[in-house]
Length: 118
Image (cartoon, one colour):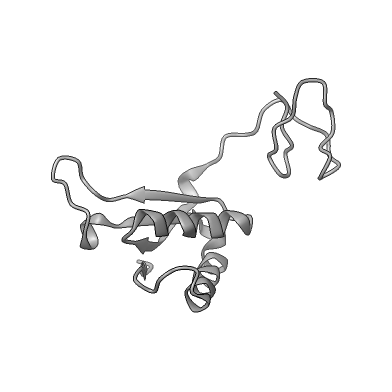
């Protein structure tokens, strides 16, 4: 299946150009290098972490969510139950502003916390 290198939409065989971006399709998308992703926010609720991920992705920011809960010692509260959100290092400032706006607008609760840079 061909893909658009801009918006990453998948097309059926035989289509050569993205209808939205007006660029030539490619056979595969390049593997994303996740080494530059930085954890910058901790949420303590899966649904909220998902909402944050959606907010970021709707703004064109790829987000990864990592669950710190352990299956060998089940916990789901406090710092041991955090869901950490990571974005590319070059997107941290923009993502931080989006989360702050979502908190002010009531889209997400203020219960999470920003992770300090080390």
